[in-house]
Amino acid sequence: MAPAAAGCALWWVLALGTLPLLRDPGGVALVNGVPAVVGPLPARVLAWAAMVAAAATAGLGLLLPTLVTMAAGSLLGRPVPFPVALRVALRHRRALLVLAAGGAAVVAGVTVAMTFMVSFWAKAALAGVAAVVLLPLLPAVPAVVLEGRTARQALSRAFALAGGRTVVITCVLALCPAVAVLDWWPPGRLAMLPVLMALMATAVTLVFLLALTHGWRGDAPMAFRAVVDGLPAEPPAPAGKRAAPVIALAGLALPGLLLIGVTAANPMDWPAYQRGERSGSGELTSFSHFSVSADGRAVLVRDDALLLECADALCTGPGSSDVHAAARRATAVAGRALKLCWYRDRGCGPGDGLPLPEFPSAVAAASLPGGPGPVVAVLAAEPRSRSSLWLLYCGDPDCGSATRRQIAEVEEPFRPADDQQLAVAVTRDGRPVVVRHNWGIGEVAVFSCDSPECGSVRRTVPATSARPADAEAAGWGTPRPAVAIGQDGYPRVLYHDASSATPVLLECADAACAAARRVPVPAAASRGVRSTLAVDGAGRTLVAVFAPGGVVHLATCATGTCAARPVGTVDGTARAVHLAIDGAGRPLLAWMSEPEGGGWHQTIIRPVTG
Image 1 (cartoon, rainbow, N blue to C red):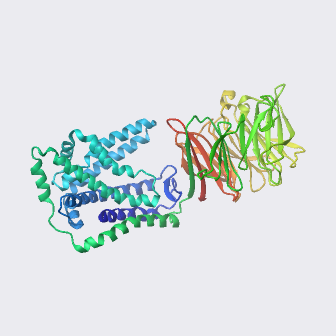
Image 2: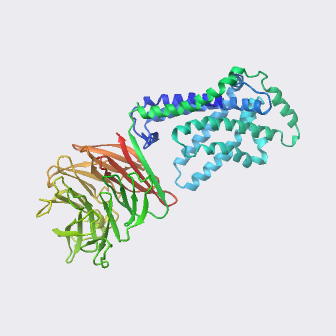
Image 3: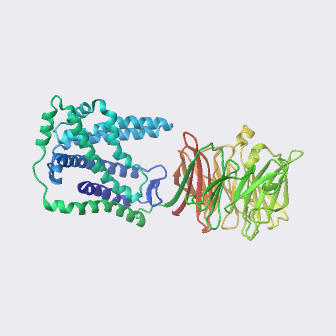
């Protein structure tokens, strides 16, 4: 254990000690206090990883044979000191480095191949084949250091000794690295490596000696006697025995302490995030709402009326539960779920949810500063190919009662594709601002109220786009727009361009948004994946989007430009990404995806820095 701990500690010192050279390169971040990949890696991060991997291959390629020699001495009653065992490994360094390089090449090839595979079962099959091929090669290490064979001879010897017992040997040797995949406390994972190295060396040596003496047929007795006689006859020094526990404890503790220090001081200037994740079974068809209350409770709405109510913003603590809204649809605002029902769909009785004027309807909700409850915007179908726009002022936070006010008549008919094309925000002085994106004609309309009661409304059209060839089909599943109020009191509107299906930000130049600057947001083209918009407590306009390659970007936009950085990756098919602002004015991002193989995966992050 002592030499394993010391050798692994040197490698961790090299790896973690050189991290400060990578000052905010992008693609990496501190997630829950641990370095993690959150996007495409730049060249200098890949170069650093290659350097560390080469050092690990060379170092571990000498450390494991050293431990094998020491383990053989202990098993055979002839202890070998660490310096002597290291000299034996160095004497056979050429053959050992060939084995290490070959194993590293196979692992790298399998890793690269898996990045191009989509099916989980294909990845599992490839990993299984690689394990069956690679793990039986480990007995080639004692064949080199205990029998003095070349790399090719050692490989031949390992396969000959394995014979028909390949699966058994694989299972025995796989027990040690299998422990490494357990979700240990991150600093504890570093301490596990020397433990695994010591156990692996003992297991490899024991399996080799048992296979060598199996049946005692042929040259087995002579080969065994040659291994025993070939062990160095130099006894360990008493001082080395006394120092071994100290070295072992120091080597086990140093990497974890170094990791804690590097991540706490963050000399790399990496952004830091807190992240919570959940997974479940069943089909995921939509992820429509994410809201956080002032006291940190979160609500997510998926598949129209399935709610996840969380006691904390990251949905990781106790008290999080999945419930059905018992309504046709639900929305969320201020960390509360709002159930919705329609008179024409069925009678709205007590507990059925907020009664809406007509069905079908597009619905959006926002907090009303100083009000008893939220304000809900509704676009309802009307006879004679018309639509009407309503505001519902809730009388309590759960919207058990509401006062309705029709604020506008819309000349265009309500199309099924308009089901999600509505957004609402409220200015600091309580004036509602409603945005409707009409995919059929490629129009973004802003309805601005003159007062909190919305006595009169001004309608403006700050943006239009080319009408899609098949507007009705293109509108199905189209991401809804988003609206927020900037620090200057003017609206910020995010919508998906009808022709390119990419998000566009409108920076309004006045309260009614009669004129606006059009700001393209870099993102992957998609007609079914929603982007989102929010303004945080510092007054920054934030946009969350899915970028090409399955990466989630958080962009900070101002004066006509958007600067984006990756914050996470998507597991499978992306559905939507949402932004919410907590009571302290900090943003939270939530996204859901459908992994290969079915089910759903939910991720929520809260930026701590950056």
